[in-house]
Image (cartoon, rainbow over all chains, first blue to last red):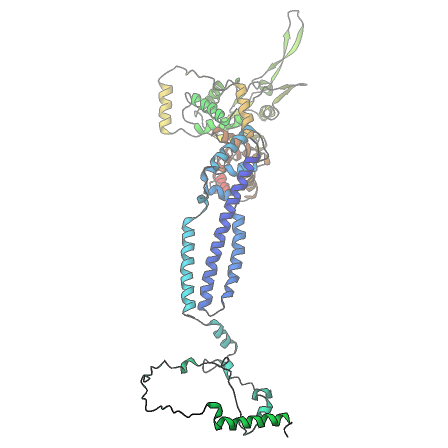
Length: 265
Length: 311
């Protein structure tokens, strides 16, 4: 029997077990992240601090797990191959009838090895359940803004113990910045108007509408019948252009434009 | 030869030997391990525990030439190795001819080896080590396979010459023979007290088969972890200064691996297990370590100390 099949089989086995182990490490790291996130939310910290335990756990746990992926631990999971895998692996460079027979036995036994041998279903279930539970708690705490112990505030108070604030108020609102910028009063030319009348026009497009002031539509009842006595049409006998009012106005307009044409003289 | 064939062959030997030797399966296994390792074993036990019978039976079922040396203080080295005798030809010419001693056999039973003088013991031990005998200027090769199975009696130490540690190190295993279980003893009584008939034994393994088995045993692979474990056990014997005055030599490490391989083959396995190393650690180490006075004061036997080393 050639040496290659047993080598390939052992490499494949190690690769599969490594993948499973790293996946489990990742899942464990997510559990750590979710628990850390929950604690941080309840402690009033920012969420991104949970990335630190997540990263640290992922690196350390993956490193430890990768080291634990060896043939001895694989054999412990597959008792039928106990001590045979290591022997087959260590005797890769040997060639005799006993080693060949051992390789044949190992390859035959490897066919019956399932991925499930290396998955701890009890542990996996507990991790998933923990993840689900902490996720619900995180959503609840975030939506309700639950903070059990506001650690940053406590730290802030502890760092300045001489002047404890009497009330929990937003101090930024108390700060008055006196501005020296004259521009806050608007254009100086407008101020010069004094008591003169100021005509302001509001651009209807830019005007904000205060919704609270908008009342509900009211129903108005209009009289559909207008009594004929109120409006009386009279026959004047002259047309619009011939009326004295139009003639007077026309004269004023002509004089106005004539004035303009003569340079205001 | 495949491992499965080897297992069948060895099982056949045990089955056939079991017709004569009742019980003592551990001793039989360990003797077979020594034979598979092409090495020698020192069998220690009280009289009447079938030590000699077991060795003689094994020789009968394995088609090996067998000779027995009953060691006594007046036994000379030449009584073992052989000597030159004057041979007279038909023409009347006389010449020296080498007359091989009992050591020229495949399986040599050196009964009560500790009763022989150190000089005679040395003659046996040289043959064991070199697989050859030098008489005068001539060196004679011993026929392979060559095993010496020596027995010694733990009681009646008066007038004996205990093997020095350096010489007992030549034996791969020191096999302790215990009393049979009550039901086994009952079967022994039934077998040997009721009939005088000798049980006919078939030869289950030929000489060449045994050599093939020895070669196969050496081919059994060992994982690096197991090798490290074996070496670590031997290293511990040198570090446990409170209980051991002297630890085992690297020969013990080689012996552990070799005997582990043989035990694996005996059980039809194609790899050496940690259990193999632990099982053979007792016969491999018990004659290679010397307990301190503190260990004796605590009434700890060598096996007790080995148990501690294996933890």
